[in-house]
Image (cartoon, rainbow, N blue to C red; front, side, top):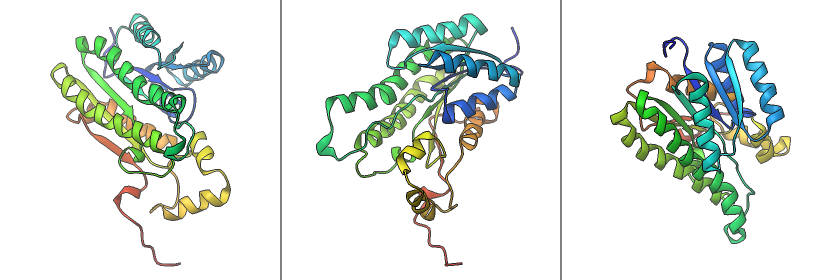
Amino acid sequence: MEDFMAVPVVLITGALTGIGRSTAEAFARDGASVVVSGRHPDAGDLLAKELNGLGARAEFFRADVRSDDDLRDLVDFTVDRFGRIDVAFNNAGTEGVPGPITEVTDDGYASVFDTNVRGTLLSLKHEFRVMKQTGGSIINVSSTYGQMGFPDASLYVGSKHAIIGITKGVALEGARHNIRVNAVAPGFTRTAMYERVTGADAVRDAVNAVLPMHRPGTPQEVATAVQFLGSTQSQYITGQVITLDGGLMAGWPLFPEN
């Protein structure tokens, strides 16, 4: 078996777009063995081909994180193909349909919490099942909205708060098995979700104006943090949240006019 330090085995859910895709590409460039997962086989197969071209040994496996059976099969496929899982990035998520609390429905709740919260829990369940034998690093995805409130987004905000709590609790379970569990919490990041949420250029300009760095983050910047948490450079870090928000959570920026 190849040395973990030389060739890590990385599993990524929600890998077909945005932060997940950028993270898969970053690990691939480093020559990792990568299993990418999502719900769209055509896009997944194309991504795996691209990752192989970047230097990875990559496979796509279709899985819906809302399904316990799918996640069991995804984890088993990864172990069957590459022998173990060293790094798992639980990235699948959805913002749902924004709206006031008076318009929350059972279906709206299920669409957000089944993907963001249940999907993270089920991913952890099956990743722990195999990582208990070898150890490893798991990174979940929260958000700055997991550390603050935002109007008309109660379901999304609640789900991202939940992921931080789950991360901290499960990290304590994993410590005795040499399994580290952390989270990344991106702020405004230039993804398709960012484009949907901000909409018009005027809204994006207004958002950028209140960000201390006056710009959104990039998926590549989040990928760098995931790689750090998956590496031995962070081997004494567990139960933590790395916030990537350009300074937004530090406080209200007061810049002089230029």
